[in-house]
Image 1 (cartoon, rainbow, N blue to C red):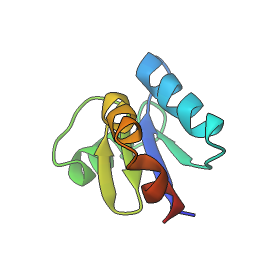
Image 2: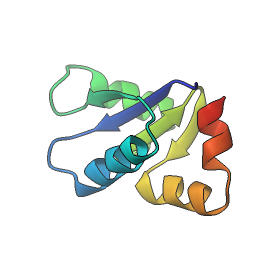
Image 3: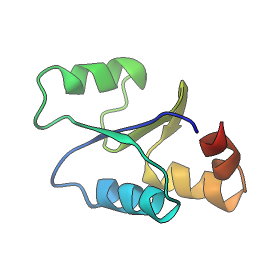
Image 4: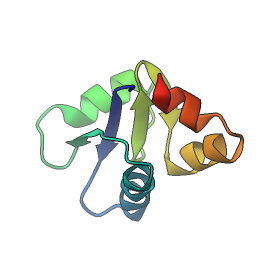
Length: 85
């Protein structure tokens, strides 16, 4: 199984939707709350080449992007192979 990391915040509906989508696929992930962890926002900006919105989703070293990007990958049949590793 791949390592999935989601940079999120507590007030973001797209973050909730992304986590629900992964939960429905029975995929475990590590959530990094940029509104609670010092330095997490900067870490997210560095990893995502300056993307400021949440969620920012990573599967292993692949930057998926946000929730709508993950949905698009799923609709194209590319998400499950990424998640499987």
